Image (cartoon, rainbow, N blue to C red; front, top):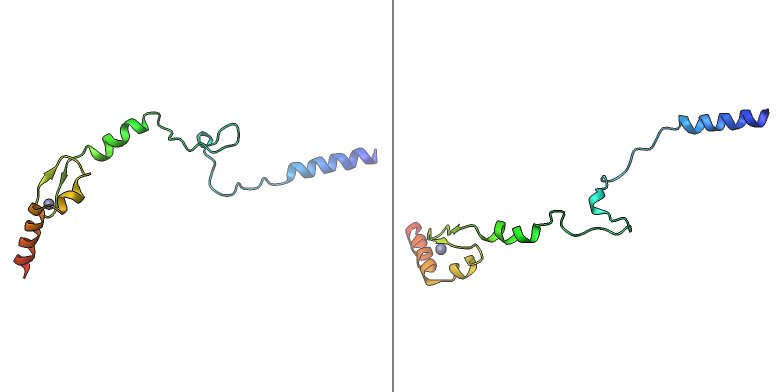
Length: 96
Ligand SMILES: [Zn+2]
């Protein structure tokens, strides 16, 4: 009798324990594979198709000379061109 009473007391004690608050960031189940490894692939299946469309297919207007470029990939080569350098010199001469 005494042992049963003790066991019931211990079970009640376990039930009364407050659950610990989870620490850290909440785990995203899509990022964790069933093997336990981390899933570093993009969640969107068409991510690689959209990548260049989103980033590089927008037209870019130069802030110095005001010329519109087809892609933002050619910004560096455009800044080195004589057309843009002359416009930059004109701006500098206006302020001097
Ligand atoms: Zn320019």
